[in-house]
Image (cartoon, rainbow, N blue to C red):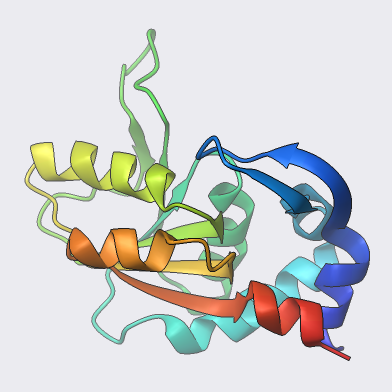
Length: 171
């Protein structure tokens, strides 16, 4: 399977879109289209394994797009998963982090598509308030719109499976 071609065929939309960062783009990757295809998602997660540092203890997926990716990646690697909410829930445990306990663990963040890096930076800020200091984030697609640089300024290394350019040029 040519993963970049399949991602492009299933998920690339053309039009006028507002991104999470507030920027606009004529291209949008509807990540849920590749995340909802079990064969493609499994192939993507299989390729992401190579980007996971050896000393990783917990994989933490960001709500909402990072959750399917981290779940399959956890299955393949055997590493426990955590699920990071954008906001703590207002009932039950009232947590923003669900699943595996992150305290005193080497946590790697997992996201689907990175544009500005804002969602990852929000998660990192919450984690750091709790004494957890992730330094690596993985993503399926880096849109190459400043996210890598923004994360780098905050001490987070972004490891992407593909860049927007690679998806566009895949043949």
